[in-house]
Length: 429
Image 1 (cartoon, rainbow, N blue to C red):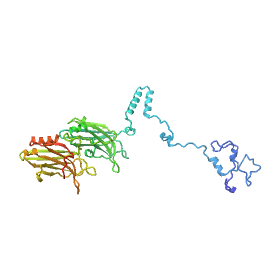
Image 2: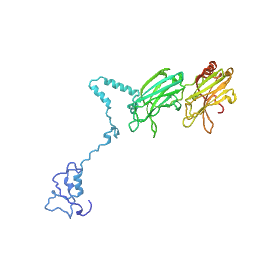
Image 3: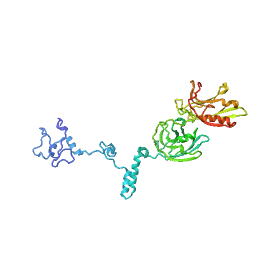
Image 4: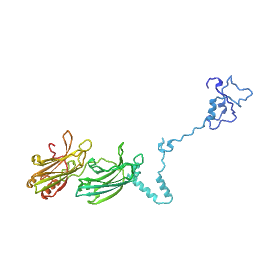
């Protein structure tokens, strides 16, 4: 106790006939010991007052005795509501679905055991590997596919999506659909729809077209359709995807699909696209070009049409190119033998639709070779060579076939897709 004068500590007379309450922190064995104070010369009890009837105690002890809440009870912790936060191992409660199955079994339903077997089989097959994604309904995507073999085109019509997963804080999403051809996914074979704002049931009704798709591609390629949520302030978020093996699609048949979106593990795809049968297996494909040839007998002229390119190799740091096409009829006939198309900015699938005419007798045409090269335009620097192809009597495969048909069918425009390679690159641009 503090050595202060007695007037600073009020004196309280209390009866000690009853022991302290059981909830007090002080042991109840000897209650008088808690209430008795050391004898003081200045404050000694009157001889008429029995020591057991009244004592002098400090105010601090008074509040400690009457205000103490008693035994401290454990405060509910967050671990009581979330068992996984316990510091010690604890057996989690059984899942709700399994509990329902047990209840059904108790009612005499014989399907409970079958359901449990089915769950075990699905777990063994890895179907429940990612519960956070698989347990969430991602939505469905409705689209049509049509392969036009005559024009080497694959038409993809994206109709609509239903019940997409909400990705934004307002409970909605800004969805769009992105298409890739696998293997070899790149910006060159990426197509996408427009973005629709604040909806979980978007309706696009857009037709996206892949050009330069051959019958060989249809047997080896897979179309991947990804539904994503556009985010202006951050990175676009992936919602789900579907994949369609193009070998199941018949030529000229428009097939409708309505598939549920899935989350498939993203793997790095190799660039193993099909190569022109006339090209060497070791040649790297640099893209494709659609060329038309027409020989007009009346004018003794050869008209070469550069229609479009597809899946060109990216040459710029932004993942695109600024392509243009050069054509040269060899042996060189001077300036009249060289032509160049316009430059198409920032694209890997340019469309030119330009024609060039060479005045050459028909009997001289078998001795000629048409060199076609695609370049990436760089301002103030030397242009980058993307790929090239040669048509003539010394060519092979589709390139030789294209040249022969031009010589054989006079007055008829013959169109062929050709694969661009790095072999035969011109010495200068």
